[in-house]
Length: 228
Length: 375
Image: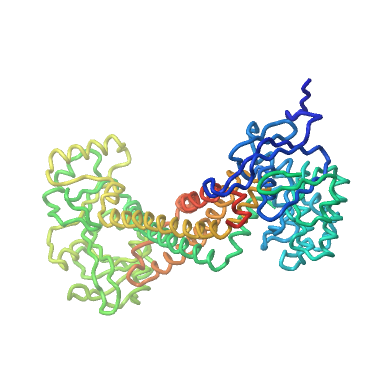
């Protein structure tokens, strides 16, 4: 028997599911994904590993609906992506993104960078942003600009930005890839704490096997396929 | 943080480029404001003069569309006009733009029928009025006295004749304040146009209605071929100089609008191209394409609106400077209508939107995935 919540999502189903996801670039000459099947449960921490170019980031982009697959299907809590009326709204409400390159806007201060995803909502989120920045240990640098921050600090701001709209899923693409080991350790610990305290589902792309071992489950990819 | 705050922030982040775009828009808008204010001011100055004289109807040659219509023999027309019902007075007027001193700018010189109602609205500030239709003297407006540095007891040379200045007057019409005034007879003699006038001014009695005015116009049209009977508003709007000035201001508006929109378009296109990754990020964090478009259009409108506001200020200054030039002083009073200034701000918004629309569409087509990968 099917049970739907108020927003039309099925309860007691995996938060993310994919079936035979295929993606290619350069008019089909480069195959990024070759029929990826995936199932992620609520609250799970999944690490996606594999060599460069195996399709890890492409998979993350497809899950974040930043890109359309050539073939295959994606579901969020049982609802197919293609059936969603407003994919931007889905991203805004349910997905938090953290990138290796941080992607902070250099001309906005820390607080405004965190508030950026909340601008379309029109809601006053400054208090919530300050609260998040306190949780990532950046509340003392609200008015500073990205250029004034270290790599680790920038990533902490980027994490606060990813969480401003209280998403269900955090998609992190090599979040420690540009950091030294100390900063990387701090960021990982932070992500782990936030995941547990906020009940987040987290998918993290990483090259680092030590980091991957901390996940609930590891997915290994090669040549656009999930091999383990 | 709101969309407008972010847009304004983006405008300020490249100050040199934004300043250049704003300056280009401001220059165009300033030209529009100054030229339009002068064109309307020119029209309004003549309208004011006719209104101040309490003239109800004006007779001119049919084909003439000059500020000073072609002269005609008043004796050919006056008797017919005097026969019309409700016509109280008919007063001849001959005028010319003349050089009245070697180093001074040209000035309007009016010859008004001695003793006619035309003189009644003037206030004598100093000296006296001409004592008779034959007296070879002038009275000058307060502004003309300043511009020509003449006072009572001085002399002016007009067309080889010397005229003592016997009085200084003030009028509610700028054109008259900047003018020299003598009797019609003296003006006809000076200009070698005996018996001729540029226009005949008609004053109707108090009981005349608009229907009576229309009837007089119809009668005269039927009986006097080659002449027009116009209201002062009709005369001013037929004026070729007013029409040319208005046409020039319209063409300037068109050119300024096109140049402004192109400048904004170029700036926004460069900006979108440089900010591809940033736009990709906005889309990735949940901004709708329409929201991204609103951001880009808000930036372009912000640029154009700032340019428009500065342009209006610069237009004020420009028109004021032009008004103070010796050649223009006392002839044109720039007219700044609040509605026109609002329309200029509206024009700024439109050209901002026009310049920002394509770059905004371009931004909305950005693939967030490709942009974030730096492709």
